Length: 350
Image 1 (cartoon, rainbow, N blue to C red):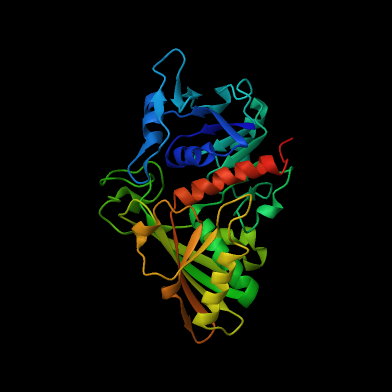
Image 2: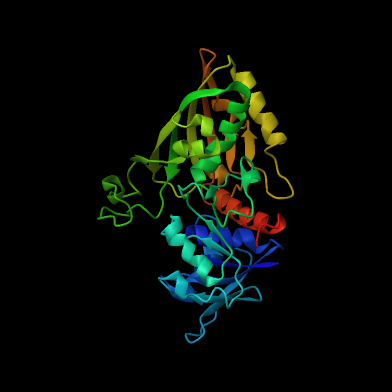
């Protein structure tokens, strides 16, 4: 069992904690979060307005001199350091850090972890540097090796898009494409109209609970890191919507091979049943749904991407439209925990 620490205990930090908790290979021992203290950490870990009450009891330790909280019978130490190098990761025996603050997305900012005794860092956001592997589980996790000290779980939308792209590109050869992700509100938006200090995007300063908000997404261009031959061939945008969970990606692809709705759906369904199904290392990656479901039906779905079969369209034999659902929180957090576990089970920690 390898000891794990979490830096940043917001949505991704807490849900990754839940996802990793039952994994025998991982032992979470420490949390560092600059806002709220151990009382808020314990409370928000157990009680979640979207994902429900966790069935493991979480309690604040109630000791300012020795901050900690308990999860079941397990004691989790807690710190509030803005500078993560001031956390005694080495003294706590931490080998893997789940970096969930959203603030450290370059190697220059992440490398100091290794001076603190940490051996591997898994980041909850893409890092766009050649030395870092942005992992999409089920698609390119086979490229992860011991030389990768920093890995990421890419982004939630990349995890939704990549399995679909994999299936279509390997069978029909993608020539170009555009995507639009209809994405729930996140903490980078304002609840009411006010200056937004988190993103340099005027639209995100408007109320996320009232408006449809066009904004950027790097998910389509990030696909080129998984499929280099598609560089410059895919792009897209996002629309933030006033919902709290379960997003959908509208994927439009031009392909070289002539196809049909029946063939596209057959390819995706077979992939969901076989190569993109669950393995000993990870849960199911791609889903295929023929029932007429809506967004709330996918809350707490830990698959990366679920094809909405009834919405598949083909125009002129070579333009494909696919809708893919995803729980943009639980699905992504589950992949983060699985990547950490792979580092252990594949003996990649040195």
